[in-house]
Length: 337
Figure 1: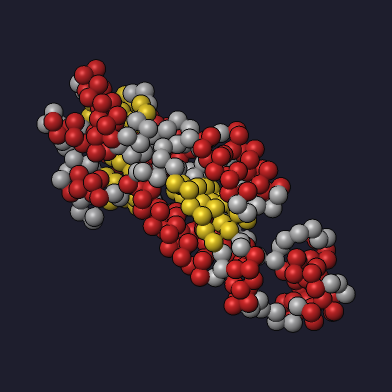
Figure 2 (figure 1 turned 90 degrees about the vertical axis):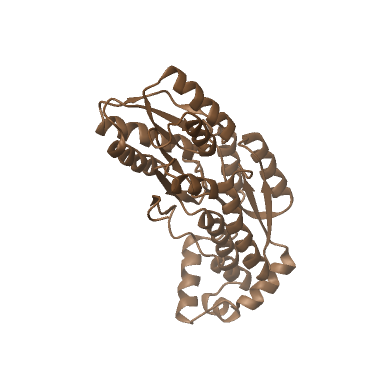
């Protein structure tokens, strides 16, 4: 680094800021330094960097909403593995688990993580103007934010890791269109109105099903707030009002409650069910034919990647490869489970 500084005619501190993308430095000076470094074959010493990170107490904060759901417990496994890897290289990872969806609690967690010295935040947001403003403030302060599982569009987050929710809803609609009888009624059960992924799945499903099955009646969206008991109550009430119900799409958690009600009414298999997430109970209902299709979205990667993206940015100065890092939409039936 000293040799690069001498050749560029700048201080060693300026070289450090340019190569690690931190601090204020003129773009043309940074570009000149990076070019010289490349020509000289500069490679950072990762062991030395790890030691420096330990001395600086560099921290990454992770905020996980709906942490009590089966899906998010799989996401947490990815977070924990990334936490172990990061901490081996001197970067501490702080995880805050929140049950349900609550923008105020997320904002409070962000404030506390900033006070604790976190240099990057990975978070599951909800649609909220205060959170957008806070992400902007963090970006202005040089604290990068990565969203995962649910995005917050038109914010200053550096990237999003998760499912293309709108496309996932369209995939579910395409599958439902193939298995519904003529003139069927279909109920959409979503999670939280403020959850971007839940909203986009519902939107994609409704628009696509309406386009390809004009004979089908799509009932008003109902919200179960990731609660199987509430999803069951919604299903029970819908059956009373709409005895011609022949399809249920779950854009979020709650399939267990829906399946229980359908079995109680001897309607398993007659009312077609498509749900998200490859959880243990969902897979059991898929095997027994109560659920017809499950859409997977790689929970582990949604937890692992955001932490490692921030690790790479803080440790090596490496930017995310893409702004939208979509996980694969996996279709499972009882035959390929």
